[in-house]
Image (tube, rainbow, N blue to C red; front, side, top):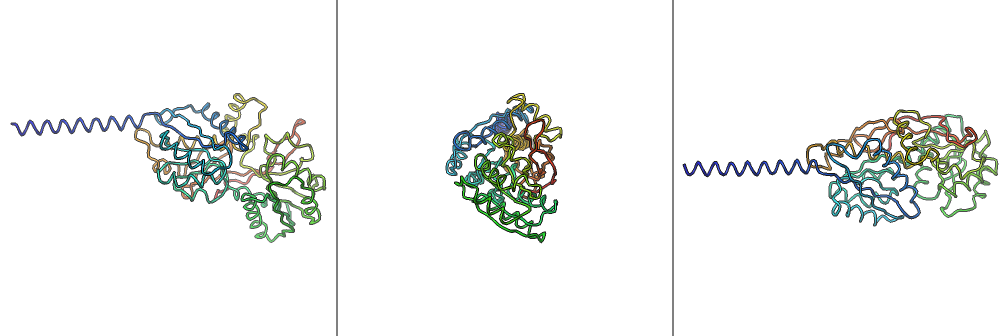
Length: 394
């Protein structure tokens, strides 16, 4: 009898312990989940951080702050300039002190490189909104990228020119990693097609006088110029110099860049920019259902005349991918490895059109749009003139 009572008591204790473990696990599974956002919210790149917030706020306005049975809390942290060490420290603090389950954001490629080891060691998913160096995602098995890569956009620049019969190419790029990557991608496409490269310029980042470069380009007599220029004042000066030499605005010469005429910067240019082409992963004129929803809420929140910048749609899509990760963990404690696996092969409709997170590379496949600066109702606009569908990110 006494032995039986001991056995029953032991079983009761085990049952209670099991119940407590189940209850604790359920509590962990349903408690608020924190998402860290590392971005440039002050300093020279603060515009990008502002656009991250715009994209995130639009997504939350449409889809709420609850997913997979959990309330989502966002924790923002500011890198404040070009400082990879700060990005790494912020990632550590978000994971250790703030107990975030996922980190999104990042802007400059070195930020992602610096944080990679932290994500790997702690098994924390990192969703890259921007950072166009192709090799970033390979630095950690916990990285997923929703932004573009340089090669993803640069190759269609040259392909579009070839498609329009161009044969003599000049490549002019800013002299730093993204510019050099643009050059390499364009060269590969041009030379594979058997066309001629009549000149290459690496333009120093501190350049203020672009007239000598425009002169060299004009003397080389290309029929296409593939460019990657620093946005803002440098791009404005460079394109004015090309127009002054009769290169831009000449129907015989195609000048095609990337983000130089991004919508928020169009007001900086005069009409000499008309006819400039750009390759880009987004155009506000897209008519897919998700973009119409996105634009409607964007205009309500930020004003009907506020242009949508380059970094807004990737931040919006970044939240969608993070929500998919959280949703996959409904009813159980968050597991970073399982969360990343849940978005391998994930397809969804973005404001940018149909996109897919590739299962093997964890990079995004999406459309690249060729846009031309035209006058619409008296205002300059980027008008889509061609689409290169389903371009892979790596």
